[in-house]
Length: 186
Image 1 (cartoon, rainbow, N blue to C red):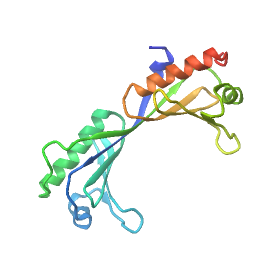
Image 2: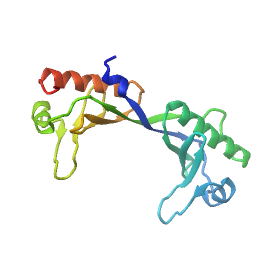
Image 3: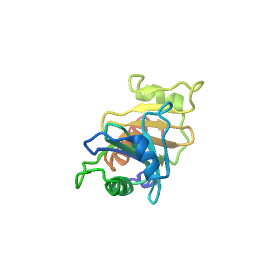
Image 4: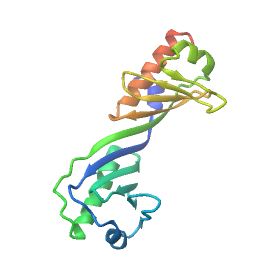
C-alpha cells in the first residue's frame, strides 16, 4: 500500500435493504420517534439514529436505505437497529434481511499540489470533466475500479461509487500511478 493510500478515510456508506412488505409510514412516524415524515416533500420516512450515527430512509414499499454511516459495520448495525425497532412495533421482518452496499464515499490526499489543467489533458477528455468556472475539482471516471474521483488542486480527492472497501485504495493507487507515468505528480 502506498503512503497516500493510507490517507484514505471512509466518509459515508450507503446501503439498502428490503423488509418485503408495505408499511404504513404515517403510523410508523408516530410510533418510532426521531423521525421526519412529510410526504409532500419526500416520499419516505427519515429515521435518525445516534449510535451509530446514521439515517434510515424507510419507504412505503418496505425498502430501507441507510446513509451517513462511516463504516460497513456501522451501516449494518444501523439497519439491524431499524429492523429490531420495526419488529417491536409488530412489523414482520425476516430474521436477516439482505443488506446491499450501494456506495462508499472516501476521501484521500495525494500529498502534492495538482495542475488540474495538465491532468485533464494528460488523462484524456473521454474520462475527465473539468470546468473550473463551474466546479473547482476535476471529475475523473475510472474503469478499474468503477468509481468516480474528484481531484482538487490541493491534492485532496474524493472517491465515490465504490461498493467494496478496497475500491478507494485501488482507485488512489491507479490515479497515483497514472499521474506519475504522465510526470504530473511533483
